Length: 563
Image (tube, rainbow, N blue to C red; front, side, top):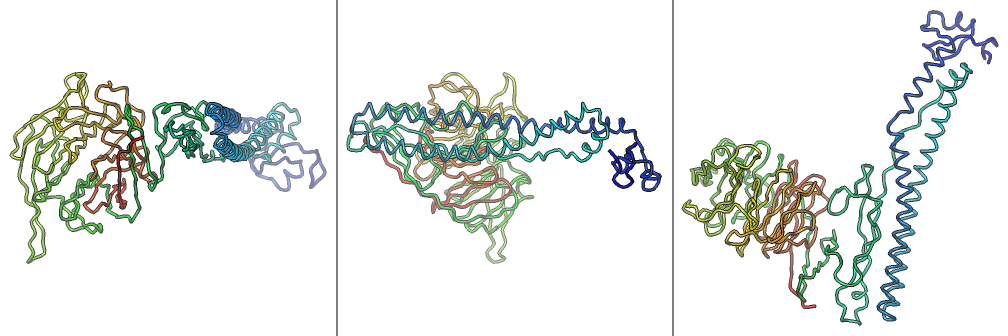
């Protein structure tokens, strides 16, 4: 190969300019440049740099993504065909009365299948093109690495650019789930009898996880049916489809019963309130205001329903760990972990001067136990959660209890064990009581998760809610904890249904009195939920990490129906 400028043999490589040069190039244009390399030495350096580039882990990831997408596409076809056959078998079992419903369901399935595969094929093609570009790059590098034409290696090597490593996001696919009907005795209700196909939005991610209305969880995306069916005869495997739409009606069948609970939910977003720091606890007052204990500085804010701050207390309260408000006189009770006491505070208002003051006195001492949380109930009794260690407890000598005191501060009930003789609590962090006497306790676990413990008025265990859609009766032993499930707050609404907030999925969920999941109410939050509050007018406040409070109009009507 000759020099384009001087038509002489290229004999060296200028490392500074990264070009091959002849003797005149060196003398006229590259005088003083460093380093000058033999073509063989320069070629070796080029190969070493290019081989390092081929070790880019993003290339491996893209190639793996392509392989997984190929499997996904094949799996989608198999799942769709399998579900189609299930639908057809259902039609055969129910004879001619189901022909029309079957045809409609199959057509819907085929349309969905075509739409899903079209989207997957689009992404697959994009990934296939990226893989081809990577293969071409690797092939060129391999060819240059074995070439003895050092000049060619230098010239092509310096001009060879590694492919971009930008990845293609997995598509958001609406999954079609088949749920069999439950009213088998009503032949005139063919659609309900046959069941229906429902869209269930999920998104696949590069780390092999799938996120849905209930959050982000580790699932084998290729072994899980994205188009699947429950058992065609009977009530299915025991899980109820969950709709993220808050204006629809949810119906679940009560076990061992011919009744169902119909629940009509309306949850309408109204506005957002800005607090400036994360609302750890929110406690409405009977006067339409709300006490908000804010983290990280543990300041106590008194705000009105518009979110306007009436007063901020910090020095007066000296870093409490929880707050609750008594309904009869609007007294505020503050829990202190290290001080091992509950203090009662009264907000004094000087109407002449327009100033507020906060007078405090010790109400209950819990020594030697450390105080974790407090809850006041209408008759003046107080529930507290206590542990015997100041740090995260461990070992057989760890003790956590729930204690009830009367309005004079005398202990009247204490509970620690469940019916299996196991500790009910690791660290109780929230306590709420219903109008009918049930007590809900958010229990932080040793594994870093948090579930709900439901007790009756005598503090006997009745149910637990341990994972998304997973409720346990008191007779059932507690299994291992969910990997990512952390309830941050709970409350009973005016109908004594439970609302809970879950950290990882950033959701607010509605449970029935037996901890069965009725509906996921809030799913579109950008940050985790820390606290919940329901005001007398029905407004639901959702306290979000970072200092925002989402306000929703919240109405729920429910009734028992005979099937």
